[in-house]
Image 1: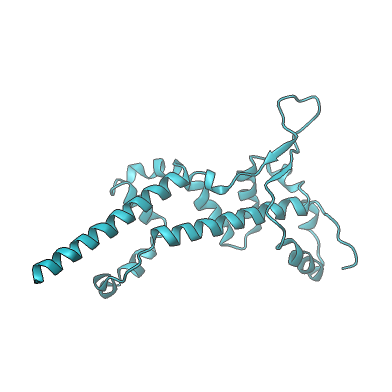
Image 2: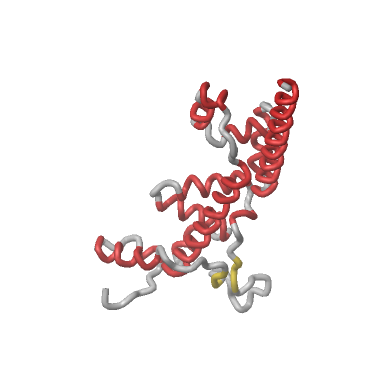
Length: 202
């Protein structure tokens, strides 16, 4: 690749040269996260429009939006990823497709960084540290894992399916904090229970 061209996304996606695409992606996939871009809606005579758009962390989105973005980045469907960028920037599809490749993939890098942060937060705060022999014997974790995000809805709604939509619209950090609180309380209760059992045995 002799020269790097900062294509518009709509033109980049129709390039037929597979090797050229691979060469570009090897560079674009390593771009630094982009947290600010030029506002495509800005016109000098539009006072209300800012010259730039701040790219928020996906931690600021709703639980449902974060779930949708996670699902999009877990697939290879570029259309879903475009939808995620639209969701984050609040721009229309044609405006996103007019991004340059550096803008588009810079935003993708910022989303990936946020997803890694979320993954680490959930691993550190929501996972169980100790093995439970009863859980292992019943294969409970594997059996429940197939329900994915529905486990969260069921947990926070106390089994009331009519509350699921409200939970989906809550801020992700609100849902995460509640899950973290419940997990900590459950661990403390388990520790107290274990201490009580030891005292009884004595």
